[in-house]
Image (cartoon, rainbow, N blue to C red; front, side, top):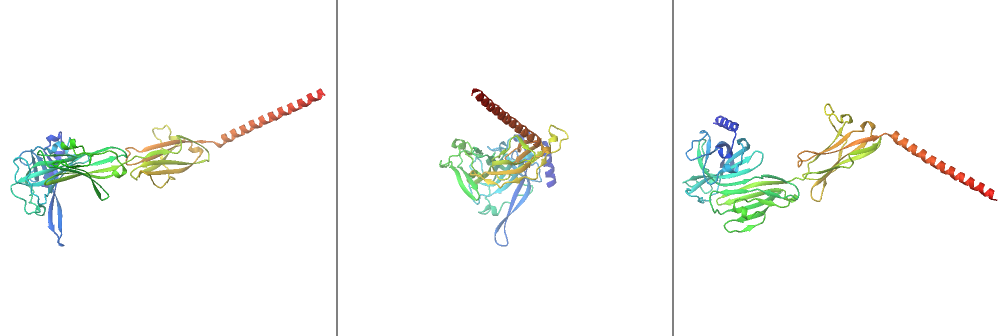
Length: 434
């Protein structure tokens, strides 16, 4: 059975999906459960991974793969495929699970519904994390579930069974993972829909961080009772329960939980928000550093106000002979004598670190380009800051100094000579007068 199913999956993936609404079936993992009492008298659940198909069609449609478990999704007001956008099958991860109402019996309020239902959840995730969709599949039955706690005695599902279902409820987020900069505004997307009008819905948002859970928003549709203001009530009436975070702070980082409850169903979606602040990079010297031969300069590259902690700073040195060469130029060398300062925690909980080295000027290094490269997860490409070292010869400096000294001495001599001549002239004039 497994090999035949794999062949079908392969052919389907090769064919691709031109439009979501044309999707006829999807390969899925059915995570079945076996509940038992262990030797110590405790209840344990064993998860069993089984191959299954999610097939879209009409009642009495033949299964695409007769040797696999088929969840046949028939028409209702909700089309699960509408929430998947235009994606290809290989981009979707499909997981089916049983859903326990824990003994709660409620007749589902749709026309023609049977008295009893068995429930399954279907979760579809984009492989690159672009969205998560969870739908409740209602499998009608004219028989009640065995026992009060139905999860202890699940009805058996055979390897070739066809379970005819309809989609009763859908919840979706387009932002299962959010990366936010400090002070930015973020919209945490959460959308839901049901297959009947006027449901009694409870919508809630919670925030969880380091084990602490707080409620951010709550709305009870049939009483109108509302707590919190970050969800637009007009949009909520149409199924848009998105939460607006107006000003992201470091304390905003954590897990946000959007939950929707319609008795006897409860479903929640997790949205993980992570603060990412890119570093500000600077070097303490200008684009051209002039040094005399033998002089020493401390060169510092600062990466400031970044988050989270991990950052990489590398200093490179480019041989001056490679300047202007596009072909055959030697690769830049990584400087080995670089020291890192300790990480400094700023008042806003971001970090700052410095990478520095001591540069001793040598004539043979004149024209060398030094580059500081800073990498951080918030950056698509690393930040680069560079400067060029220009070394001046001591002889030229000494010659200039000697010329200056000679000029000063000549000026002093001329001044003294002029003063002497003026003194002699005055004495001669005074003699003549007397």
